[in-house]
Length: 446
Ligand SMILES: Cc1ncc(COP(=O)(O)O)c(C=O)c1O
Image (tube, rainbow, N blue to C red; front, side, top):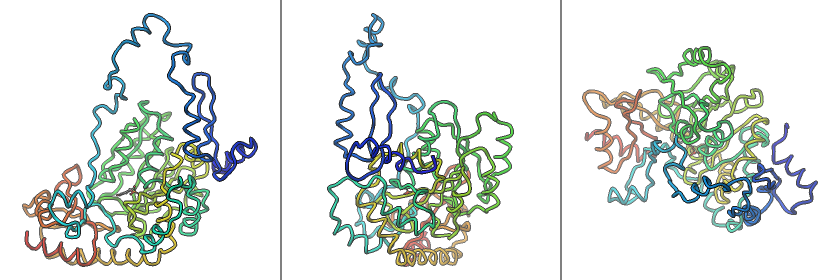
């Protein structure tokens, strides 16, 4: 099928004459206990979905093939054990450590939110376009479920990315799209693998663990380059019938800000895996391969509104996909995954992008200034970055954790690392000129 699933499904729905109104998709759920149900999630209201699910009752008469003999009776008398019921591969999984929001930080630090300089999550300190708050104030349909297709936003993105909207799917942050890819491609706990290049963004490994994949970590070198020879060797030595399903590449990479070359990407695309290229910070480097998804059927490109458009709190991201992949994502995504306010905010941001891209330029100017300013501190060694953050090695007998803590006492928050490849490193997100001056003054006091 070369059209999005929702288009084909809409045609099916029209043929059945099932439900009047907007929203184009009808997809089939697998048959359960001999009952075949159609799940018209994209074309009906939440209530309709609920009433469809209601007939799946928990009465034993619904299960004529089970719970009959004495063994089964015993099984019914046993107590429910959470530990036995949970997927075994999740029992010992480490929880993700999230970054804390302003209001919680303010409470913990005993400070006013306005006095905190938050440079720890690569957010955008300039805040959203002023047109976003105007649009949200006037939004008429906050009481109605959002458009499952995010149509207006995808139309705006069509113009922004130069890709037809049929290639684009919107999610609750790029994070949701990463999770969706795992759910589409990975059968849990079947020894399927993905490749990750640490140090990098933590969600690839997190989602790999959550979705029961084996995450093969191939470490980057001291300059954060991808070990392409090692990767190719892995495919040669491994089981050719079971190559890694996905390879996650980030450009610019978080946390160091390095980018990949065209030739490296072409080498990756020759591998028998889906290459997921995360361009969350594209606007800060200006280099994109989003158009390549029309040419390569094993490439997916991820983007977000969290950084350049300062909408991290709204949770909006998107992916660009080959048509053969996107049709399946339409079927499995939660119908109302991106809220009305978030879709509106993102659409207005694309329309008012000149203002936002000006702010991006300001953050890039702060990046240039950062390299100049830190020359004063011989104990800080910055790495080159094409993004809105700079990674620095802490040296000269100082400890990264102390730098972080000393700055936190002054209300300035940065990230520090102690993991492999990042020992004694800190990452500083670019703030406003005033915030950055406060940082340099504080560093001078340490
Ligand atoms: C490389 C990378 N990809 C994706 C994301 C997540 O984006 P979103 O906020 O859209 O979920 C981040 C957030 O920090 C990131 O650094």
